[in-house]
Image (cartoon, rainbow, N blue to C red; front, side, top):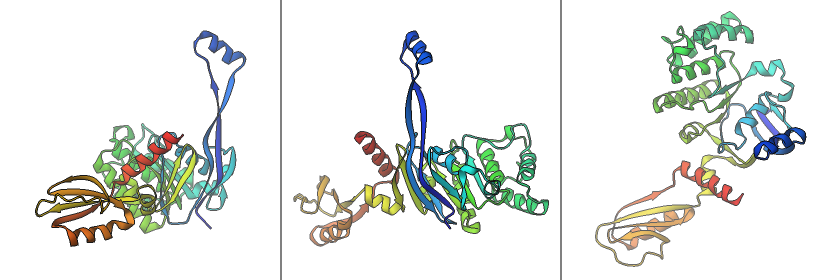
Length: 327
């Protein structure tokens, strides 16, 4: 049984389109112009137990809406979401005990309470036995480096410390599925790195299924074994990062440094991006890069050679840009 299943999930909102001015406001009250907005359109995927999957998409793509449907916060317009075999829309209490959701722009801990007091409240809500709760939360506190912070009011913690406390709170009932929506939002690079290290270690140790959304591609590159990409509410890719790179960036650049000036035309090797007597950059199909590099070494006075790939951030950005232009 898959841990998470999205089965033709769709969500359509209805908004009122209002004409400008006072007259437009009156008309919208008397005869509102209701316009359907498709936030998620027929999205299907499944995630096996223990997988750590990145969920990518630009702002407004439908990522958070999908997560909310999978966790039972929103009812889908059509389709079904399942978590550990439970129908998410039924909000079964047993399902809620086995999963958790962390949103980078929301808090589940109480602002005026000490973090530890918040953990105690959540222990009662999830009915975690004291014998299980204390050793578990103490381990989480140690792993997250919060030993000297948990008896501080949440309002007095830094953003990074609060997010670590939110993670501890989300994991104190030992969920089998963890949904993370922008968990490193607004954090400095050091805090981002520490949270990534914690999540990677936690996933490997406890085999907790994790679905992660993030605008920081480094989160996804370091953590995800697989990525699901959504754009304009529609699923556009599901596979490994290497497969994503191959599909949306089919070329590589061979950078050549020469030991003596080369004036000959190099277009027989591929597309010449730039060339001067002592250096050239040749763009070639991904599958031809090794052959072209070997040909250059055999026929030219090559002092140094490298095969460069475009950064994954640029590939994803260009992919969304191209789709935006087509739309």
